[in-house]
Length: 471
Image (cartoon, rainbow, N blue to C red):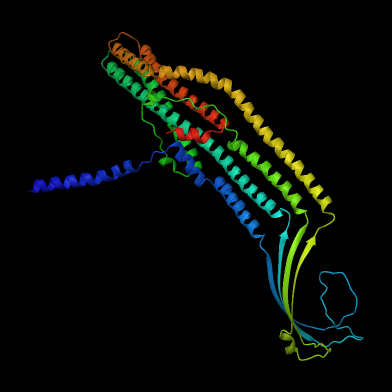
């Protein structure tokens, strides 16, 4: 019975120690390229800044719409003042107080109270399309801000994609380096055993140890590069570097079958062009807004007011409390037509300024289109050549496992021949080098293929679609 209890205790302890390790394995997250780019869009401060500017532009649209509401102002003024005036008119001088009645032969320094309440409303009944021009202008800034955000996100996606493929290549390279270290470690172990038995000279052991050290240095350098790329991805995505893992089935790179993507150019939705097109739209909307701003306006206005004064109609001064109550009530409504006769000149000047800016934006857009066409024209011959060679590579992919197996068999044969004393250490290390080079050459070829496809998708405006195809 005691033995059974001990067995149960040991089993329980083993399970309790194993569960945390299983939990860590289960929680390890494998990130796809699209998940990394999505993480950057919700983390990177530069993109958050662009998103805040988009929200600001949208708020400006709401503000513009609310500016079309009628003005409705209410005020009430209590005052204590003298009442001395003269007959005659004068132009408004801004800070000159208003005095009603009080026309006498002499000044009267006695104070009088007054109370004036006003409700005033004003509405632009007709402004000949100005409201629509304001709304179109506000919306054009929203489109520009969103295009700016998309352009910035496009560049970030490109940078992350480059790092992703670099990380993928480095992980494959690390696998190959580890295999190379293991091979040379095996070679050194064999040579050391043969040297200790007196079958091989000690120089072979020293040479093998030097080669093993060299492969370990190469592995450490690749491991350092791997950590550096993860740190760069961490900076862009906010994901801790230690948690960044991408799908990398060890020693399975020979099974990759890349598909050539479409070379068609999306000039309508290309974020690199769309920003400059939206910038031009802003100046076009400003052009319309200027034209409408200097159009005539038909105003509808209405007001009601009540007034009290401690001075009565017969110029009799009563107690100050008398002026606190309302004694007279009035209302007024009217339609007014307003137009500044110099508006034509003002509009001409403003349009001239904006049209030069519009012309500049048009040239800027054309420059970007030309740059895109030039990059595509320069890229197409190289890409077509790359496509031809990659088609050959694709045809050879089915042969690559045979090639690697042959290189592996050759290495094993050379190892056996070396043990038998038939060949030298140089022949054995050459066989190991051929196997390592066949792996690394393929890794480099596939990495170059993906980067070429990436550059083509960027120039064609199909980066998002390309990213979605990478699983």
